[in-house]
Length: 73
Image (cartoon, rainbow, N blue to C red; front, top):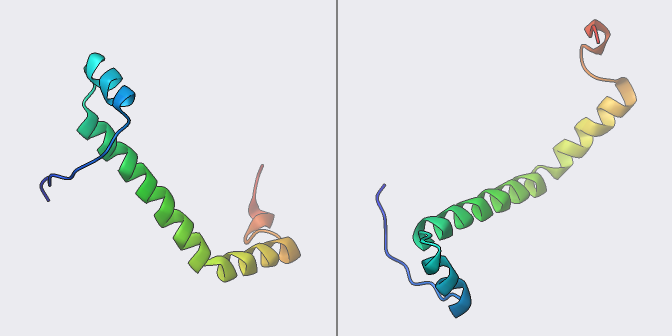
């Protein structure tokens, strides 16, 4: 998809430390933003599907796991 330029504001000490350590701030920021987006997408999915998740959990609590009788462990 390519790359785009964005502006970020960082704490001066954080930026100075990253530079001194030779860290690629763009790649680090990208990785952190990607991880935050993944976590938020998962949170939203769970919220949107809460009713189905709860219904399934109640069914398992009431009836046990599907095909549970065939488990060998």
